[in-house]
Image (cartoon, rainbow, N blue to C red; front, side, top):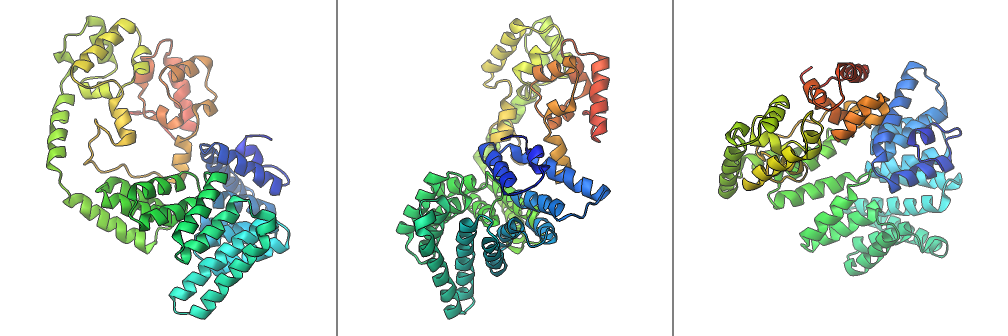
Length: 458
C-alpha cells in the first residue's frame, strides 16, 4: 500500500479500497492531512480549468472535503456523484456533522442497501436515528422520538453477533446509555471503544461530555483536545472546549476554539455569540501579578547585546544576523547561530553562558509561542488566520521546492522544515549560512515566487 496521499486521491478507480488506504494513512500520521488539503485543492483547480463532469471527480472531491471537515462543500460534490454507495455513506457523515440527522439516517440506509460497508453503515444509521430521536423528544415530539431511539436499539441488537467487538458498536451502545442517563454503564462502553480505537472521535467526545457533566474539567479538557486532533472534528467539541477554557480564564485558547468553528460555519450562532463574549472577557480580565512579571521580562529582553562582554567574533556575528537585543536571542536557535559564517562552538558556549546568567535561553520565545510560555506578549492580539489555500502553501515541506544540494543544506542547517518557515526568513538571514551565496538566494526567491510568496523584507 502506498503512503502517498496524492497518489491515493488520484487512484483509478477511486473505490472503497482507495478510501480504506487513505483513512489508514491519515490515522497513522495526522500530518498527512496537510497533504490531503493540497491534493483536494489540486483536484479542485484541475476541475475548474478542465471540467471532466464525471461522477468520480465529484466523488474524490466530496470524500476529501468530508475528511477535512468541510461538510457543506463535501455534501455538494457528493450529491453530484450520483447514487453510489460510497457517496451516500459520506453524505451521511456530512449530514450527521451538520446535525441533519434525518438526511443522515436516510443516506446511511441507502449506503447499506447498496453494499458499501453495510454493517458500519447500519451502525451509523443507528447513531443518526438516536440523535434524531433525542432532538424530536426535546421538541416535544416524545412518542415519535422514543420510537426512533427504539429503532436504533433494534439495529444494534441485530448487529451484536457480527460487529459487537468493534469500536463503533461500543460507541453507539455507550451513546444510547449516556442519553438515557446511565452514565456509569455508558462510560464502560465508551472506554471499550477508545481501547479498540484510541482516536474514535465520537467516543472521545461522549467521554469528554460525561466528565464535563460531573465537573471533572481536567479530564474533560483532555478528552476534548484528543477529539480535536484528527479531522473531521465535531463542531460541538470546539464549542465545549472553548467554554471550559473560559472557565479557566484561558481566553486566548477559548477564542481560537470558537474561530475553528466559524472557519467551517461562519454563521454558527453559538460560536459567534461565544466569540464576542470571550473577546469582551479577555479585555476585562487583569492579573496584577502576571502584569508585573510581564513588565520585568519585557525590560530584560530589551537589553541590547552590546551591553554584555562578548568576544569580537560573537559581536560581529550577532550584528550580521541583525540580533540587537536579548529578546532577539530568545527567538534564535543554536542551529541558526552555528550556521552563520565564522561562528563556532566557542562563541555559542559564550552566548549560552551569558543568557543563563540572566535566566533566559536560546529558542525560549519560540517554545513560548507554541505553549503560551515566557517570552510571548500574552496581551497581543493573535495573528489573523490566512486563507486555507495560503496556509496549505505555507505548510508544504521544503523538499517539494526541489532546491539544489547547496540550498537544501542551508535549509537543513537552519532547521527550516516548511515553506512557511522559509518565508519568515530574510535574504540576509540566508546569506549568513555557510556556503550559501547570491546564486542560491536567487534560486530560493524564484521558487517562492512561483508559489506567489516572498522572503521576509523582500
